[in-house]
Image (cartoon, rainbow over the protein chains, first blue to last red):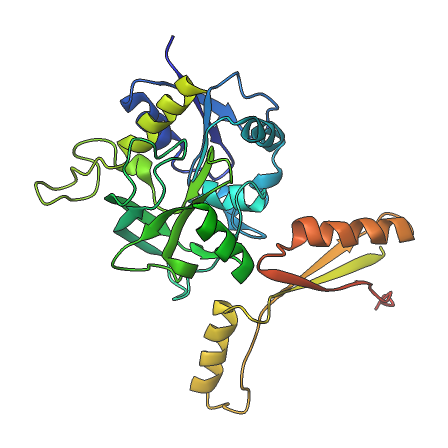
Length: 233
Length: 87
């Protein structure tokens, strides 16, 4: 039986189908989950996709973090189930306190969309084990509220613990503290990042590479890593 | 109906891009005497019946847990609005 990865759709999710497609690209079964249910349908891993849930009202991800299904997501996260939050999903993870820190409006106050270079800072999380620490990858980034913030004590703690999983390289696109693009919980099964790995999983639809246009597939390893984590769990 | 008012502000030490944008506009309008602007949020929670102490305590809790995010914001006040006479 193939590994089942749930992708939760919230009101205002935009990239849920892209995330499902990425899951299928690595040979897993994508299971569509609904925010209003109290049911994870027994999935082995969970993706909180990007978008603008509830129009970013209150704070980005804040209202979605109180959705019915988040009770089950929090339980699953605490059991060690791999959970990936992408962009708005990262904001939800932070609002739900599943990962440290918070997000504010980009420092330059503008929405930004670019193919973003990242460095993998920790290749031992559930979503990065197929990378090597220090790998540089390119995945699309697109957000308005992407500035990662935490107090100095928290930043020092997560830097020390290896909970900074991805860092922006060359350009810090939003003023995030310490160029932080993605973080994990202490256990490493919950990972959130602002850039979109699910948009870099298919030839012809990813970021440009030196070899060809739109052929970047650096995002695939996020999903293959999760499959390994499920098998090892 | 009675109203409980919650005011939330971005933490003083953090950049407030909205406030900065408005502040920039004031400078461009020739009002340099207004040195800076910070923008927060005001929540008006209307209540069925009387405001009880228990209700106020619950709103204080909601203000911290949901209306604001303590990483980036402070709850500056939770008050019961003065009743306004009908015009």
